[in-house]
Amino acid sequence: MTEIRLSDEVAAALAEARPVVALESTIISHGMPWPRNAEVAAEVEAAVRAEGAVPATVAVIDGTPCAGLDAAQIARLGQGGAVVKAASRDLGLCAVRGLTAGTTVSATMRIAHLAGIGTFATGGIGGVHRGDGLDVSADLTELAVTDVCVVCAGVKSILDIPRTIETLETLRVPVLVFGADEFPAFYTRRSGVAAGERVDDAAEIAAIRSAHAAMSLGTGLLVANPIPEADALDPDAIGGTIEAALAEAAARGINGKEVTPFLLGRLNAETDGTALAANIALVLNNARLAARIAVAGTAQTA
Ligand code: PSU
Ligand code: MN
Image (cartoon, rainbow, N blue to C red; front, top):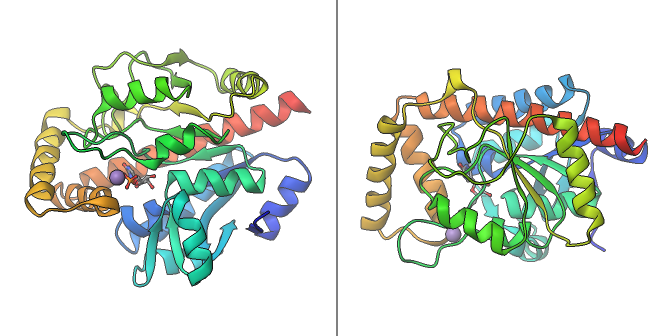
């Protein structure tokens, strides 16, 4: 089995069955600008600690999958340069070529699972892209085969939200919505799509997660945690910016793994920092909820 390099802190927590929360790193390498990305990575780790769990930021460093990074490794990911974006399919190539990579939700899930970490916080997952092309994020494929609980703020409306939800149903991935009746749309609390089962309590999510695991479906579980009201953006304002970014991506022929980073970059650039501020707020909110789920899960199995 592939060796995952654990930080001392993460290794100790896992050995003692204490709660651990995995965190992704494409958000650092390809989702937010330097140096704010590295500051946010540290703030997210602190938010996990404040809830009583140990953060395990995941990335590939010189070919080695790692769970638990130090500040220098996070800075290396955040400064750009020779840092690639790795989905789970890319991990073998990264290992052979000794690449350094920010890991997407799919790659982070896989590394977390191999390391024995069952709870993971991110901002937004990838999904089915809008339009007629067959652009479906490997995040959905990984959720179909890897039993990790992923806490996100829904998906951005750069994606086709109804098709993303339908695909999760087909793949047998349960969708829980924390404290709301509608699936959230990342920058906004509402998407107009009434999907997912409402749950108001982190301990119930932990219980559902372990009951789900006991069914041996092998699939992950998605928890959609709406952005706090105070941090949410105006849907009309951000909607127009998203439309413009999608049109520009199409006109420039952006494709493959470049699509999502391009769209994220345009949104951050076009909104005078408000999209970035909302993104940071929701990631922190997700880290706190994931930590509470991990803590509750540990208490239930103790
Ligand atoms: N959506 C966001 N922010 C992100 C991503 C998606 O709102 O940072 C990143 C995540 O790492 C996600 C990846 O796993 O993009 C999906 O990329 P793709 O669409 O190429 O599968
Ligand atoms: Mn894609």
